[in-house]
Image (cartoon, rainbow, N blue to C red; front, side, top):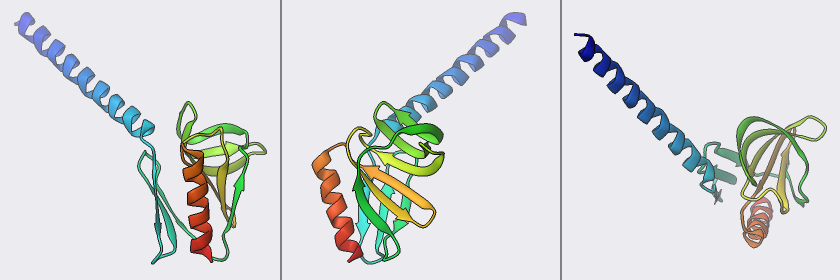
Amino acid sequence: MKNKETKVKVIATIAFTVIILGFTVFLLLRSFKGSDFVINEELSQLEISGGLYGKTIDIDDNVSISMIEPIEITRRTNGSSIGNVKSGSFTLIGDIPVYLNLGNSTHDWIAIIDGEDKYYINLKDEQETIDLYNDLLDLQN
């Protein structure tokens, strides 16, 4: 009787461990996956999907869009940070809460400021970031 109980406990422990490891691998793979930036011209929106922290940002005349040099990130408050890839809620120098979706935090960012809401995005490739920036300016005009 004791052997049977021990076997059941071992099998349950192994199954639990496999499920946890599988979930962890799933989260890591989702974190590494680059985001997709889709401009919806009909609704004047930028849709950010992929990864774990998607967003939809309305692009209108009240929104400021600019290219900036990277700013020091001081804290991750609810996001993913693996190497230079950052996604989610962070705090920048001066305790400024922001949403980041950076494919490479070391090159220029697109700043989208809408009142108190601050979004900073870029892609892994600098030229693709510049192209997205120009597309956003075109959408706004």
